Amino acid sequence: MAMDLTLVWAGIISLAIIGYVVLDGFDLGLGMLFAVFPKRRDRDVMMNSVAPVWDGNETWLVMGGGGLFAAFPFAYALILPALYIPIIAMLLALVFRGVAFEFRWKTERWRGVWDLSFIGGSALAAFAQGVTLGGLIQGIEVDLATRSYAGGAFDFLTPFSVLTGLSVMIGYMLLGATWLVMKTEGDLQARARFWSWVMAVGTVASILVVSLFTPYLEPAYFARWFTFPSILFAGIVPLAVAATVVLLFRSLHVNHHDYRPFFLSLGLFVLSFVGLGVSLYPYVVPPSVTIWDAAAPEASQIFMLFGAAVLLPLIVGYTAYAYWVFRGKIDPEEGYH
Image (cartoon, rainbow, N blue to C red; front, side, top):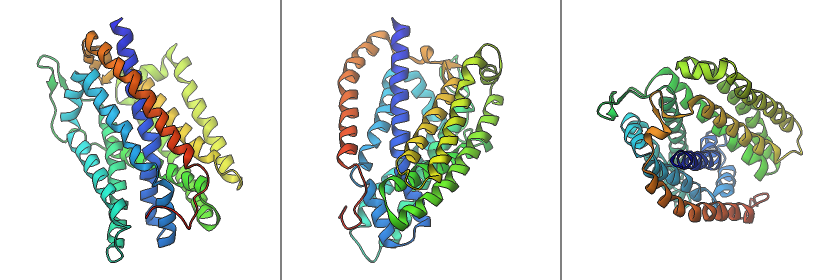
């Protein structure tokens, strides 16, 4: 029973993480794309396209972090000290970005400053998320005798974590650009489609480079991807990624395909997340702590599961409703004020 509950909670936290990445990723990407859309009218339309939904996306981040603390406290106690700097940087960037989102509408004199703050906050948050991911994938040094983090404050900072940080930035800009293709029309949409091409090429290249490096970080990763019979199951992921990439470029080539590029880009992120799961499972803190090693007591998992059974459908429901209500193209003459 304990093993099943641990897997359930691993699934819930994974759902929360991927929910945050795909939902908040596109508005972080849109914030970074402000840099290549300098006109005020374009920036107003871009911001109006996410204004009704952007601040609800962080719900998934809170759920993922809170769920990790409650369901896997040992993992939480190891991951936070190891990745404290990029996590704090991410949170501060998200706060500063939220302030910039509100203040740019309230001033004329300082609008340019808040636009730059929005760009910088979005870029730092995306980069910090990627560095956090890379720091986790490359492994965290653990003293199992004292059940504590045994590394230094900057052990996370390596060429690989910088690579994953830049990769996440590029991937988020792909989501942001394809979101604009879906939500806008005319000249703005045409330029968004161009940047979707650029970021799609960059995202595919990033996936290839990170995928080539990852198996050599830990012997367990290599075994999962390149030994029999694991390769029979793991090999499905790169094939699915390749098929999604082909469909994505085809959809970007057809001008009347407004919705497909965005959803195919989301699919690319989901498949990349699945590939990450293939590498890491069953470790929550690689290379030494599994999800069962880090899990809370069975009674705690059962108690929390009742709460999750109520909250998770509510979060999914109101998120889906918000996106449904504000579906369709954005009206350039209306929006957030």
